[in-house]
Image (tube, rainbow over all chains, first blue to last red; front, side, top):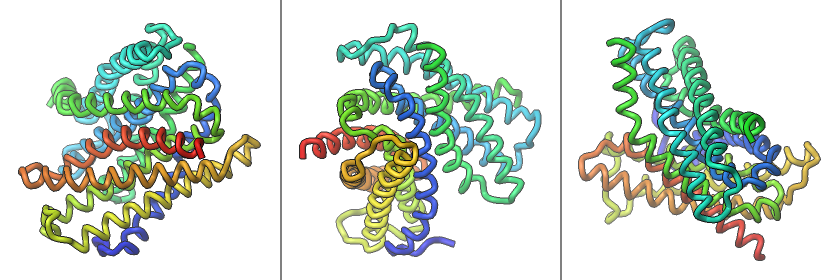
Length: 184
Length: 188
């Protein structure tokens, strides 16, 4: 069950997972490249890229580990379940707490560096709208993949977190792209 | 428990760690915005950013999880004073996987950009990716081993240390070394 601790055995276990995940990330890079002109024109938006990518994955993986623990303990049922709904509400609330600060922080730091071109309201609006949308997406992706893992009798601890973080990375960039199109 | 009680508890448990890692990502974003000129000079570099950042989490997160499990099972002792073959293999495998994945990312980015008839400089991208992979790999492997060992010796559960360490330091070091590597490669 556990991998041998030799360089060859460890690499043989990890590389088949790493290469496909890298291709997914390149997909998200291609989306970034598609709006490179806008990103380079407004460096404040470039500041938001790692936050948007990272936080969506973090929200998803926090929810995923909570759901899989509940599933292992037998306290979770899919459908309108207090535990499921409560965790989903908390995920959205977490995003709405963190993202206004992200927008204000990005604007303040770029203003201090003298590279800010966008008004504070626009940056905060971009951050909050992408954060809110991402939280909803993170909830849907996590619940669906936890349910799929459960149905296929795979351990959600092994499967769900890598799937959720990497899928949220790509969707995070797409959401940022869509919001920037709308707001900027 | 009611929905409200579940939500309140889940929120309270996560808000601290989430805010800390968000501050880390924000700092990484500032460094990234300093690369504006390099993104113009090295077409295709922006495509690599998500892959290079995610590799850190995927490779060194799994190194951390492996070390944590081995500590729990008593297969590893949390000391650097005696050489340990298992630890050396695990670190070497993580570094090698990190380098191979970085090189693969550069080649994949080049192929996709070529298919889309977009400009990309294969050799420069490869050099930046491998150099970033090497520098951030050494730093992250060292950080993960040291923090997990130190945490374990003080009675913390290594499993809960690995995630936050890798995401926060990974983003900051990853972008910082990307910045450094891009400058070095462009100066050559």
